[in-house]
Length: 246
Image (cartoon, rainbow, N blue to C red; front, side, top):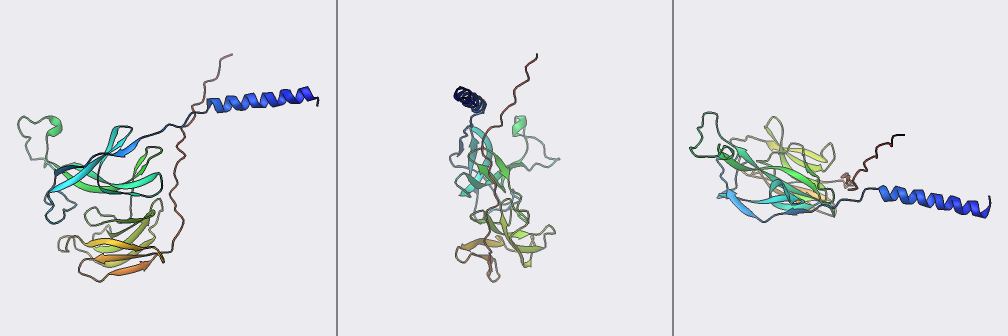
């Protein structure tokens, strides 16, 4: 091949490459913040999750993505990676009975008996702005007090029958719990609250200790594994161009 032809081929390849990269959609940045703390009325009688002794108000913060309210949250957030964190959702629930009559003068949005209660945990990605509810095995909002370490959640869980209290260690994005050991029988109506204090973690060797109320502590060794949380690239998908009619 002659030298001029070689230069022509190189120039063509460079032109095509520039066109491909020029049409690639740029990464869209997102702003994810937790707002200022505010207090809302809260009572044990009105909250199925149960309140701490003497607790008459709940501290909540807005989760804002690009300035838009996504969820209300409560408690401290935990950084899982340098871009993802978990935080507990708080729910505003309509506790009105069908027989309750609306208060005269109330707007439709204000009608009903509204109560705040602690809810599930959320996984938030700062890069993509995605907010995902975590479905943790045997998690009970009124019983489970999670202690986080890396992408592990340690807590006392209650089985679906509501009759057994379990020591649970769940890993984000894993299908099965890393640890599930029965601690004791459970009776929601008679057992003390809280059923367990938050577990304690030890790094080396990796161990977790559970503190069920009125029972002996229970410690378990955890075999450390790789994080199974897969984070998206955050790149926007390129929209294909419509074909040009001939």
